[in-house]
Amino acid sequence: MEALLGVVIGGILAWVAQWDASRRTRDGQRKVAIMQIAHQTHLWLTETTHNIAEHEVWEGGNPSEDPNDVSSPSIPDFPFEKSLDVISLLPSKHAEKVFGLMESKLSAGKEASFISAVQDNEDAAETYAARLAAIIVGCAGLYSELAKEVGWTGTALSEEEIGRWRKSAAKLDEIRNRPSGIDIGDLPSAA
Image (tube, rainbow, N blue to C red):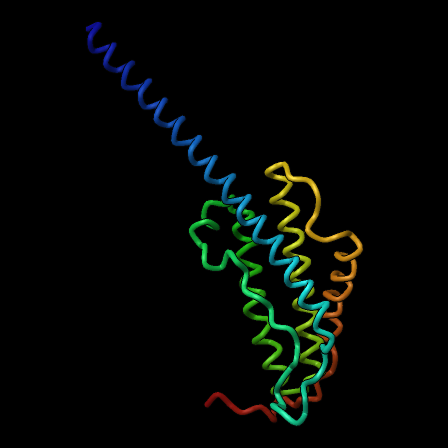
């Protein structure tokens, strides 16, 4: 009987030790994933805001070339877009934000192309710029949350920069609420 009790206790202790080691490994992987995504987000923000500062033309394209050219800086790929396995290690609240930002980036170009096709390049460029600003604000917020979680100090963008981007992003509702001049009857039917 004592031998059986010793085996059961030994089994329980082994299971607890294995569970604890697994938990520590998982926690360590999660912390590394948070640091990696935070670092990549910081780099993306720095590169993107620098590219925008260097790109002076936000409206219209060159009329002598493609009439649908929005002539806005393209939104660079997020470095973590090819690291879905790393994103999956993040706490779900952060992973949801990362995937939301990736979806916003994807839909921003599609929305601008659609507006350019049915309205004009100026509205498309304004929409694209506002969508990009919203993505930048979202990334700055994500970076702040991730950095705080791993004990990093500092921000990816200054409060002044974030304020400017928020102001640009706020124009999106104004742009979307403008009368389009498009009569729904003018659109081709799906039939």
